[in-house]
Length: 165
Image 1 (tube, rainbow, N blue to C red):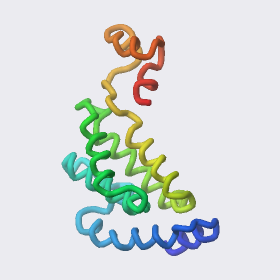
Image 2: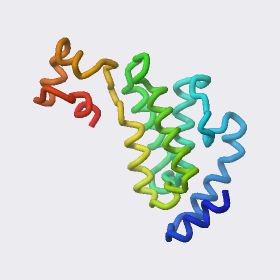
Image 3: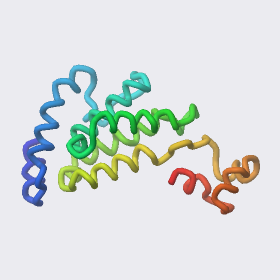
Image 4: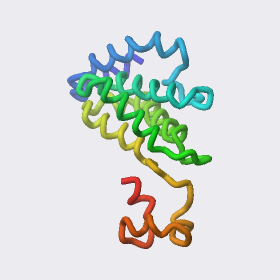
């Protein structure tokens, strides 16, 4: 893992050391319950509230808690969780899986270490919010049966994409 920090330093990341310290500080805690840095992390074995805590841990490891209060982060993530419907697929667990996958691939590739905390924040928020309030049906189904969503956006297609924005 040391090479990742060298890459971060070589591209001029001013907070590479802070990111490394955050990674190391949380390492023992994360290993004690599950390895969130592993692409094979199994979110199914955790409760929705535990997944919120894992999301907060990801924010911390990415150095985002240095620019935003941890309680604010926790409230935001819990709000996203509460905004998700209980669909078979587009649900809180799916959102967590997408976010955790982004986290793992971003850290393993070194990408997240090369960008500043504000850019990391934007990427994590995008992954968390990509399916907020998804009704669990297609645009075609909504067009035929739930026109109220189309009415909100004044369009006839891709209303779900506009709804998530």
